[in-house]
Image 1 (tube, helix red, strand yellow):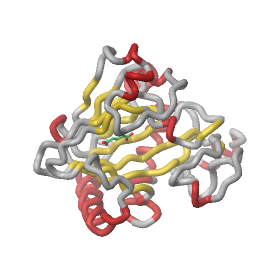
Image 2 (cartoon, helix red, strand yellow):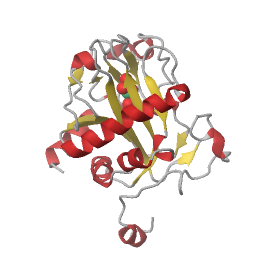
Image 3 (cartoon, protein in one colour):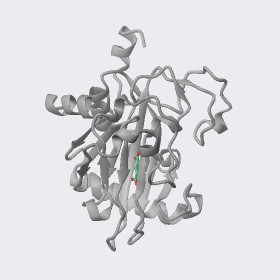
Image 4 (cartoon, protein in one colour):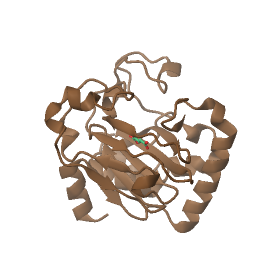
Amino acid sequence: MREDLVTAYREDGFVRVPNVLTPAEVERFRARAAGYLEKHRADRLQHDAIFSQLVNVWHHDPVLRELTLHPGIGRIAEQLAGFPLRIWHDQMLVKEPNSNAATHFHQDHPYWPHANDRLPLSAWIALVDVPPERGCMTFLPGTQTRTDLLPQDLSDEEDLFTMAPELRWAPRVTLPLRAGDCTFHSGFTGHMALPNTTDQARFAHVNIYMDAATIYSGQRHVVTDPLDLTPGAPLDGDPFPRPWADHHADHRAGH
Ligand code: AKG
């Protein structure tokens, strides 16, 4: 992993990493994602026009599980974070052809039932070419320090800027991706995704990583609600794996 990419991530709260997947992996995962979407449309969380969102596909599909638990991507995420991580959850985010709806600016962490954690991050993996007009992401550099805000309302384009008016005129960085490229962004980095105005679906697979020491805050969330956890319980074990880890090294380090 290039040191300049780590430095950029730590400064800006996001970074683009090219070619995290080989062309053969891209084709295998893209074909599988398209098939999965057709089979599971009814399970989508979002039935509005922003995107089709399918959470924890790794629980249901052995091929997409390889993508969520991809050791190379997990290791890059740990290098960027600088501490041990676990999978929090994955999500398939498909912007349907000509769906024409932006994902408005927001931060991710305020939606999550996490406490006792250092800065988590997401790997947003492009399974097709994603130029701006197909719905790539735009980031607000440096906003990973804004850990004080309430969850933003995704239906309100202005909500983040109403909460933090000084961000309204801040620089914005839009990062187009080729298939197999990835952007990593922290859980507090403000970001949005542009609309898909093309006639090809935008397939993104997002691996979300959290600090391995994260505990459950008690807040409701679709991933933790079925687990019936007590507030303060560690988010660890089988539902939140770290398969890329060197278990011997972890043991020596006391994790
Ligand atoms: C995220 O991955 O945190 C996003 O907000 C993605 C939004 C999108 O892909 O439309």
